[in-house]
Length: 235
Image (cartoon, rainbow, N blue to C red; front, side, top):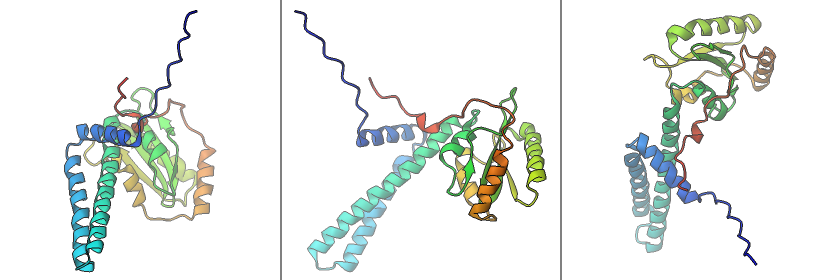
């Protein structure tokens, strides 16, 4: 009787350490300085732990060891935070300039209190230039994706349209593109976070609902997801 072949085992997802190693490798390829920043964070935590040990645990071996261990773990935590931020920046750097990049930011990295859609409210089908909209405590943010020479008119049109419907709500406009004075893609969340708060939370909901009823000018495919731009696992 022929032996039955055992079904192939489902490929396991990589463990946490392997995932971190993959993220580190991907980030290092696009940002070689990440190694030095992580090393400085690690050493800084250890140095602080040593200083606290000498200050607070003088003469106590047990206290000295505890502070050194605490400093080591603090350094590791700082290094991981640095890796996370640099990895996010590297991931966005890979999609910067591509259609839908701002949509990826709106989907995964909008600051707390801001509401936005990865689908643009207007898009030029020929050039793929687009305008995105978000609503938050700072008012309404319109973000144009593409060169300013092509997107300025799109942005101005959308600004006038929104101002007619909500004349008392602040409108902030930004450009994300190749121009020197444009907002870099990875700094979009930070830029929105700095906007002065003008609306209450209920007002944000009301404004967002009012704008959502307008719909989009054109349906287009969803934007790029920067967190999917990662090295493929070896098979």
